[in-house]
Image (cartoon, rainbow, N blue to C red; front, side):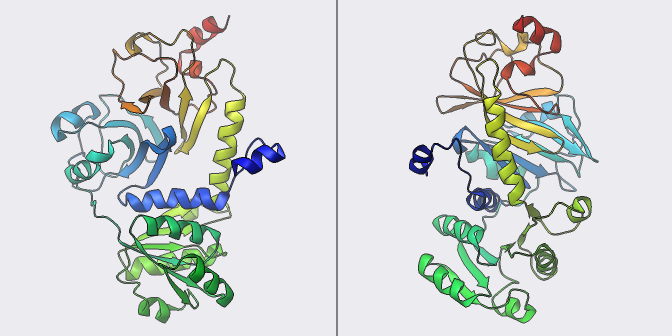
Length: 351
């Protein structure tokens, strides 16, 4: 792909199906997560989780989490009743909250157990529809050791998938046939992914799978009409290829708008907020303890990536040229690392 881009003089190439498949595969790998945003070329993950009833997190202040649970995590943001909060140390968590957290990979299962979340690995998946997303996703899941069964209505497509994915089970049939779904083990599958070309069909399939299995549900939706209604339905994680593509384009254009050398390397849209990864250039933000920076109250520095080493930032930590830093903020539209500072400091730096 890099060769094609260079030969044709293209600035950017996007494969929406491949990008969407990568997003879904991450969620299947971490089944407790509502969403997974990756930074530093996949080395750092921002997990969105839900606090269940009876969780130890209920009523706990953010500053108490690591001490009481014996963990090393950073809770960055909380989404509650339609509002998003940057979670400072005195913020009290409640059951029913969705929260965004950075958890070291080796501690994920322990952390999930501490807060009352299932951390069982998904071992089987049923995919309805044999399109491009299904092909890319199945290849990734097979590589991760997950067995995959694809149900596709078009015989010619089934034959092609059988050749391209010899280790997957390809079923020629109608994915909306309830008897067929039952025969092929809907009740036992651990992930159910509706990827047909019709939104209505995908919604109905996921609703049916939710009633007849305990599988983690994924539902592809192309249209954005009636978004609030769709999101209130028990259809699991909603897959939006257009949104994935838009985020990639937005990430690129925001990087091109860079004004002071601190490019936006990665961008993820969250609930009423953004998570961004900036590359740190040589300017007056380097070499200054974070506790001495006039950082905006609606901004939180979540993680520093320094030559592949992951650093959860504390007050004494300092940014260095060449670092990438992950920032979450309820303020959208930031293009430069200087934008994390309070307005008066930003204007002073730019004069």
